[in-house]
Image (cartoon, rainbow, N blue to C red; front, side, top):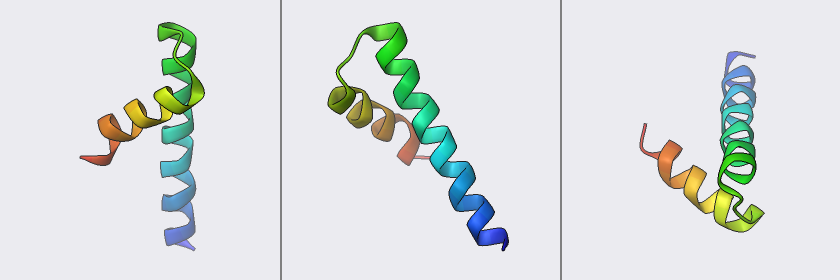
Length: 43
């Protein structure tokens, strides 16, 4: 149960980061996804 919660929480963080890149930087969904994953995947 805890593992499912962690995965869902991580997915929400990724989606929010992608949406932020699209809204504030005017990026395409693909570019926003690549940038968000580069920023988030290290931590």
